Length: 408
Image 1 (tube, rainbow, N blue to C red):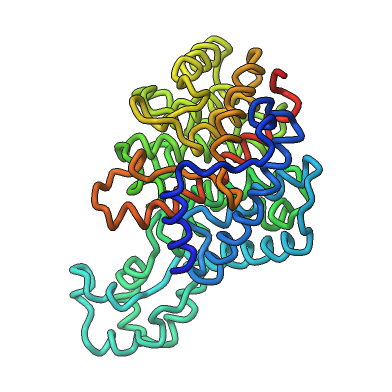
Image 2 (cartoon, helix red, strand yellow):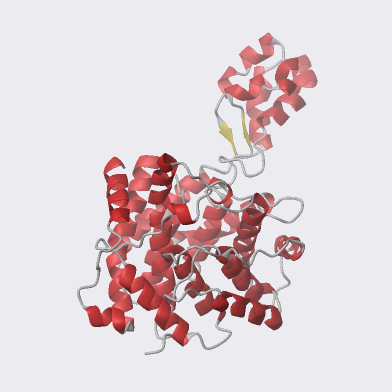
């Protein structure tokens, strides 16, 4: 990981690097040039995603979902990918997500809570065999708890112990690896032969997301969106909620009545203030309205997004900051999905921006300072690594969506 971080930081210093030897390919960003650029990004995405799995043992900070999503999208468009590796990554994700779907787990610090102060020392001692053991359901927890306590102890303390051990909504070990993450897994595997798109995993994941939806219809963001971005928590909530609803809708037949979860999410989103100066919010809202809104709303949001484009053909994360690969990739991905107007010239210019800024290792840089709320140099160095990967993932996804849609 240290080696990769050093590589990441070193790349940020090489801002003037020229990446494509064939200069006309940058001037005339053909489909062939786009395919070649995305192909060159896949080894970087593979290395970073696999290292994250091996060294961090989790699917966040969105590295693993982007690994799968980009490779599936590339495969669907005829690029060469290793199907065996993808199947192995799918299995790893399935196993990891399923291991983080627990309703109850009693941890040592839980017994130090104020509400647990009523528990006698004798009962605490009897609870030790349960410490850190995960349970999928309350019934499973009760089955293990009952033999440990006397009838009187169960009568007096079972409800308290059960409540103490209950995992809260959006807890790391309850939400399948993160609601933002599982939404990306659903989107990235939709329409593929991946085990993540098969009923056993897919339906369980949809049910998991529905269980974790908050009373107001929103879904709470993970730390990646809640704490890393330079936006308010309510805006992060909107982003997570919109992506969750979009991912759930992908698996509903168009003729069916929308699920209650989606209806609640739409109602929540309609009550939230707009954040058009934030381009990530703006692009996500456009995709959300294409799925759930009116043609007038789509037209208005699309024009706002086009008006926010920089003179270099790219988009910055928020108003007043330079264009970056993360936002530009996301925007052209959304515009290509929405297809509500002739964006071919927009795709052409965005391609020029991205192809000209691709690094020698096939990646795209996104400086954390343009997005992160932190101003601490040490923290920004760490976040540079994360945004470097996110930026590359979105650039690849966006470019793939523009194939055969850009003006010559």
